[in-house]
Image 1 (cartoon, rainbow, N blue to C red):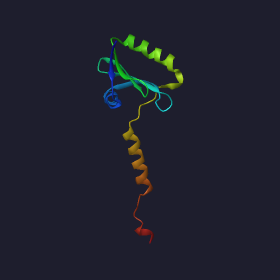
Image 2: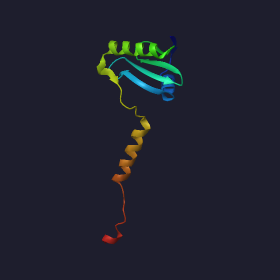
Image 3: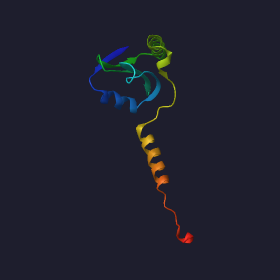
Image 4: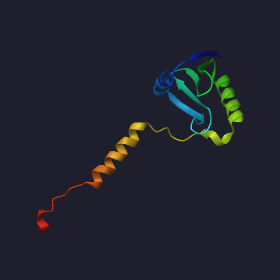
Amino acid sequence: MEEIEILSWLTLDAIKNTSEVLETIGDLQIGHCKYIFCKVEDDYLELFYSDSVSNYLRRYESKEEFETALEKRKEEEGEGFVKNGPVFEEDSFRDEAKEEEEEEYDIGDDSEKF
């Protein structure tokens, strides 16, 4: 395992956005940290976000080492903070809101009614 300290959440977000997110543990709105386990090509990564200690990126040598770390984090944080569901990007919510707004103000041809 290799570990690199990351100073900015923006850097972690950039890595996350280019990877396949496999699992998310924790929540920064409820707790003080969040772990994102992801895969970029053949590399298994752990992205650690924190509002109280240093952020980091860990690269695991093998899938087995990665899975062991994932299970360890689940035990540490508890199963209640594990998110397996689909990851939604912020833009998808904007698109839905825009569609709803367009439907709300849909102006049809009412000339026949008058």
